[in-house]
Image 1 (tube, rainbow, N blue to C red):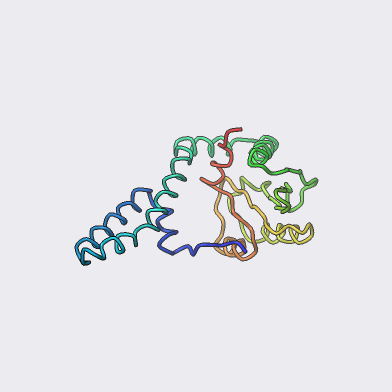
Image 2: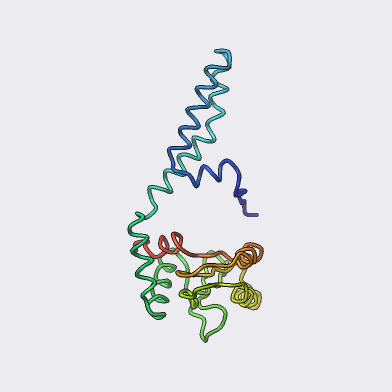
Length: 192
């Protein structure tokens, strides 16, 4: 069973915030414990901030490893000008570097890549990466291909355009991860 954090939980919001916000919250908890609790309970009250301290450390680690925003913008601009063959080769190289075994799916079907890692299979659809709008239909096709190949998860890659709200809900409900913007740039910027 894979643990999934609620999107609006305190820890999830702190992970998305700048790392220093978590440490400010810990400082406020310690100050409140010192001001409001008797001295013999201060340590117990101050320790209530420990989980938030851990979240701050995780957020700092992730943010320090994330690519610089200028590089993200540059990479997304480069992707927008790439022809399909170059984009497909770049994706395949990035996934290989991430530890996946990458197989190209022949034809112009719903899936373009079959990724295998640790005994699990993921299908990826990237051919429509430059479309102006992305609706539910390509996701339904990807889901059908996932069922046909026995893949538990799917990836839908887009570099331009927007994904409709219905498509985003469909992806969430059917095990399809949307790879776009910063996530796409981070994947492509990983160094071998």
